[in-house]
Image 1 (cartoon, rainbow, N blue to C red):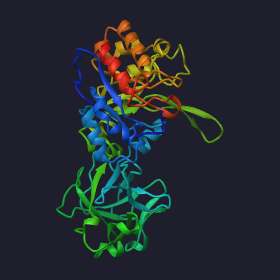
Image 2 (tube, rainbow, N blue to C red):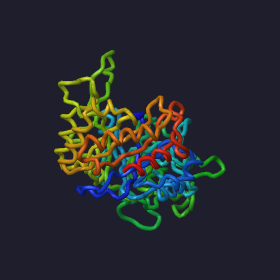
Image 3 (cartoon, one colour):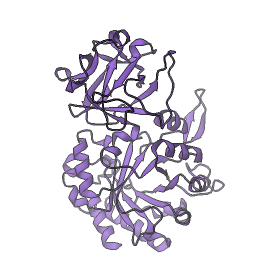
Image 4 (cartoon, rainbow, N blue to C red):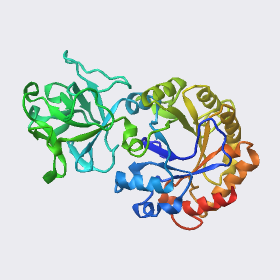
Length: 433
């Protein structure tokens, strides 16, 4: 899996934490699904759906919702992992704001460093938000802290601070190196006051002389949805946006209430800037607790191995880390990723031992099966894995098996079709179980 992709939501049905299943559950990972395939999603009816909306920008939120309802809605897992612990804690887990515009699109940072409501991808460029006390400082909010209508704030993009050029009356620039008056905003609720909650309608208000008069921010339909701070009232329809908080807002909360949060648990080789690299673990029990505090959901740790450190130190995850996660009360379970048909990898990574540890801890176990790079029969590969799990694990009936498609240009696995498709594999697994 490409670990540079961070915003993932998984929808599964029929999974009750702590209860054994009568048979394994099957989920369909819709990552990289094409709109033409999504339209035939009723052929992929499963026990649940796992999805990453960033991969199909041509599909709207309504398209995703319709597809999920056809395959199987239910439990939601929002993945907020990163390529390093530093990225997870300092970037991904920083409170973000996503704005949905009245034109049906989401606000993003354009290549020219301006804000525009011109994308169907909610997580295209979520903005970090800061509180701005009267003393001119910028304070990082806590994960549980909420914005209040009219309170002063600032937004930070990947290019810099969001600035109302001229203080208001013009476009919204995203590359300011410093925060001052022009970079200070207020979010106001046109229909009320108080805390700004998930899904509330809000209007950004720019400084322009101590917030005196107009200069509310709205979308300009004649200029491709570019945002301009030139509306005279927050009641202007083009100046009304839906507020969503956190990176998971780009996908999960549009369709269902998340049951679990999810993050990677492995190391990444991080440059020290001097030609050397060090290993940075992406998830610790403290991180799991912090992620649960932010999301309000127990955490699923995503990994690839249950091998003791002494046996294979070069593997990205080890038994020690999985056991530590399972011992954490804020962990809801573990997800292992192994290529379909790679039964030797299941053995060498000691996945059977990991499944036993997860079951004994009374937590959820997911097995994710992307295609092998040279796969020509994904159905046979997935079936070989399921047979191996049934023959070797007494906890087989408690597993959640995820059928996934990565690198379509290499594997040539489709979603709809025969043996080398998710549809074919799903049918084969249902018949076998």
